[in-house]
Image 1 (cartoon, rainbow, N blue to C red):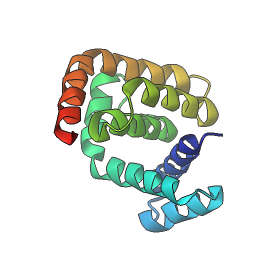
Image 2 (image 1 turned 120 degrees about the horizontal axis):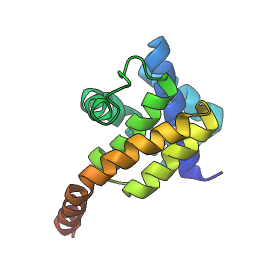
Image 3 (image 1 turned 90 degrees about the horizontal axis):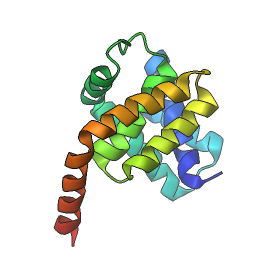
Image 4 (image 1 turned 120 degrees about the vertical axis):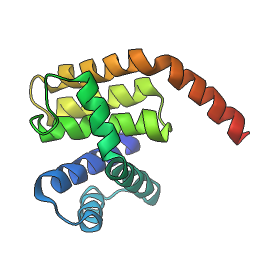
Amino acid sequence: MQVRRQARIAALQALFEIDCADHPVGYVVQQRMEDLMLPAESQAFVLGIVQGVLANQAQLDEMISTYAPEWPIEQMAIIDRNILRIALFEFLIDQGTPPKVAINEAVELAKMFGSDSSQRFVNGVLGALLSQKAPALKRGRRRKRVDTS
């Protein structure tokens, strides 16, 4: 299994536990990374996702609510909402992952951990959001590349 996918799995499992059991973030993240025996570079990726999602959760949930209005965030399956949060964080806030890669990874996580309808739901929400945000994302990525050169 790809190293980045394993890291996303660890992040998803940590966010799921934090979301449903409200366990301490540091402890949960450390346990998930130890369980999956992730290398050091993957551990930084896991921490970045978990901390980023938690720090931006209100903004992420607002975006999810906009593109899935018939599913209030608190009634959405915990696994689905955390998969959506991870993908949105990766391509809209962190911008370290291309949108299509983030969506593909989210769909794969939904296949592994979600219900029978999770992959369609996740793909639909993220696809709708991407089609609306695509022009702004392209402008932002070009600007980001120029700034880092």
